Length: 420
Image 1 (tube, rainbow, N blue to C red):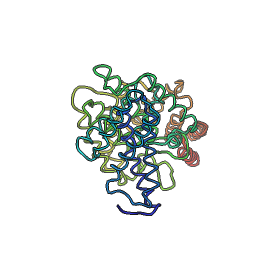
Image 2 (image 1 turned 90 degrees about the vertical axis):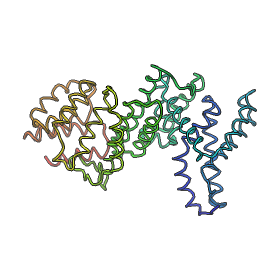
Image 3 (image 1 turned 180 degrees about the horizontal axis):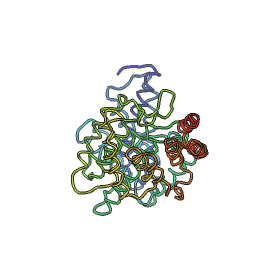
């Protein structure tokens, strides 16, 4: 054992907690049953606290991860015996926990079981009985190891509101009772669709925050990508899963260039592409190639193809906008979303000019879903500026500033207004 200072042990524990907490909770939830999810979380939390209390003074164990698992096993066993939570099943559960405690997390068989536990947990968190907001919060808490405070900060919500959301979700898990059994057939496909919906929502919330001081929340993006890779590497994966992972990886690659040193928004055409993460781009193309198997063409496939077209371009001038426009036509045929139509208008401007793009978005004015959408007003303002109508452009930017958006986006809109 090596004895670090208290300040050196804390970052190590924080790293381990972020990397291991989710799989540890999933592991104990399987052993104890989802009805005792709180006990599983408490055992993991207590193990982390004991490490924080002892490691700075007694030294970090050679196998820190195994130490955490064994300590959490002991905590769970003590809690079961003390409270007799499982009634007649107490002794059998204690025996199962004791047997499990002897397996090291690095053993191949144990590693495979831990990945399976984590996969089943994310499938459980995305049960159709739970709302999407509940699924996101529960996924971040139990699988991602996020604290209530971190989840609240990510979604600009009160901690008490997130805590209540989690309590309600866990009550549904307990009283359902929801199980770790892997659904089959059409039920599995429905559940998988819910998982993808939750991961896509989680990623988008991190990629472009709707409000708050920061435009991006990288921890949300990377957790969504990690969980997507977990599902993609499992036996239940489909080309649609691969397409979503490709999309998230290719989009996440741009994160280092999306804001400047002051935290201000940098538009795609002005981003320093040398800052794009080449490893994530490689990962994105790997999964994009995998997604091409079969005849399924989902919204994720087309969005990933658009992201891949941007990633292939060495500079803004070499972006193949006609291809991107055709892909948006295809995407609009799959999803008649007004947001897709707005994004398509940007491609129209690049291919056919701002005048035609303005005509394309006229129909979006009456769409209630875009009533307070700052990006619609921002795009229109930009197009009006391009066609030489500065007064109308300025009015659009002023209106956009009255809509909900993040502070970096607000500063960007003020800069655009200042240009006029």
